[in-house]
Amino acid sequence: MRKSRLFVILALCSGALWAEPDITGSTDLSLALSSLPEAQLALTQSFVFPVLQGDHFLFSGNNLTSSFTFNVSPLSMNAGAEAVLTPIALAQIKAGAQGGSGWNIPGLGNGLAINKRGTDSAGSFNDRTGSPFEGLVWKVYGGGVLQFDLAAVLPGDWNHLLFQVYQEVNYRANTAAAANELWEYEADGGLLRNGLNYYASYVIGYQLPVSRFLNLVGFMGEMELKLRDDLDAPGDSGYDKPDWKLSALYNTGITEKFGITFILQLRTVPHYTDDTGKRYYLDRKLDGETPVLFKFYRAAAILSWKLR
Image 1 (cartoon, helix red, strand yellow):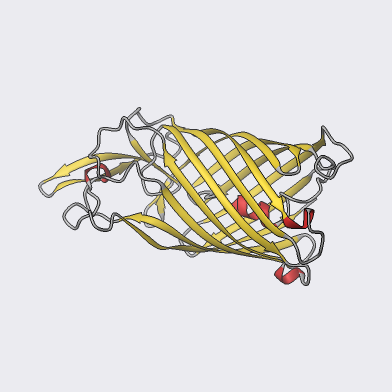
Image 2 (cartoon, rainbow, N blue to C red):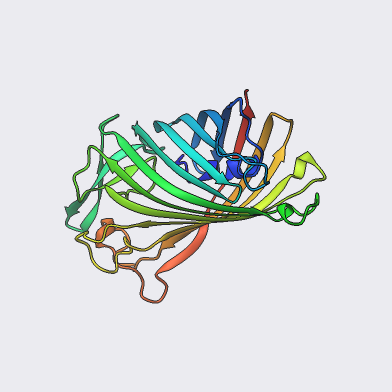
């Protein structure tokens, strides 16, 4: 399973973005499952260092959090590190790096493959090739968070209306891919390419005080845009269009250390003309009247345990 920011949602639902930091750090285990044939098991070790703290409520929780994550799926394994500075209660600054590799399983998906243009008598097609651990997929990123809890200005158990905006620029690359080659990672569709990308997410949620079994509901919108514009492809292939995902989420805490986040997702899907829809991705042409469709993507559940 691609991370797909589900663990960002998990952090939101666990209260990590608004709660006071645990200065002793924490060890967390999570298992993500979905209606697609995918799964991911992740182990995260975090350390929290109080910095720049003051008496005012805007500065009392200031800290620097460093986290180290290892995750494995049926098609890949990855490791990453991230640092998050909270200089004020309303904002965070993030920077991190991650790397991993994958393998292909017939009938399940491509963990790591190069997507080249194949041709035959019927025209072009997507020709995916790859060997286990053939390349290293790595990413470095930096971004900023603005967040707000209405209860901070209107105290009350029923006033926890939560907002978050995250903006990120990242560079992602596959060491086995040439500069202009498309590639696939973790069965994501085969449209990745070495280069810069822009990612943004927007979250609104409501934290309920009554029951642990219904402690947060919310909605999340995510957008990812490839920033390279020098690809030799038809102008209407859809490669340079933003990808959107819309998620509805619900979080429940079974115990103090175990919780589940349920997620329903829609996503944008390019709508190609009938005569080009099965061609190599960059040879396809978007339908002029309806170039993009919103379709059901997946239902997912993230089970999380706080080990320490």
